[in-house]
Length: 175
Image 1 (cartoon, rainbow, N blue to C red):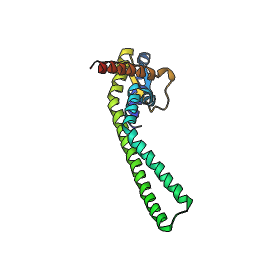
Image 2 (image 1 turned 180 degrees about the vertical axis):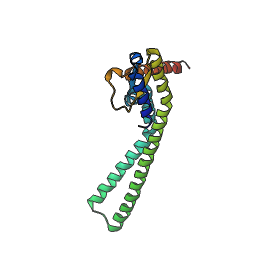
Image 3 (image 1 turned 90 degrees about the horizontal axis):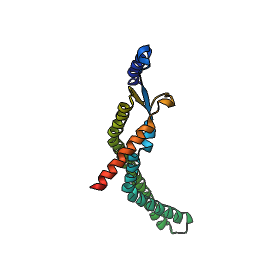
Image 4 (image 1 turned 30 degrees about the horizontal axis):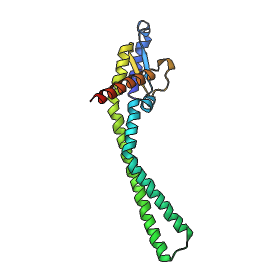
């Protein structure tokens, strides 16, 4: 909010002056929508899915083993020492699975953040390019309390990112 206040004061000052109020062109970009739908982000998700799928499948297999062990314990048709051994093994396996799940979650979260940070510059450059090409004086991005839908240029940004993504794919296929 502290960061937004000077921008809003500047905007109010510019808009309050009748001569400049008609000249000011403002746009808005819904960054959540950009980060959900940009082809670069979607490709990054696929890349991360391929990278983390084997570990996830291993964890799912181990969870099925835990379930199988729990089912054997629930039957209750084993000797006390075998039951104790199985309970101990089950506790250890649950801890191991939970630790692996947490490690996977942490690493996946870190890698997602890393991928988004790589795209920030590209997204910002796309917004700047659209602003210059379309004569915008100010582009705001979410979170914004309210933006009139007529100010929303999110689709223009997504279109620009698609063009850049396709160009990058063509360039990579030529290599």
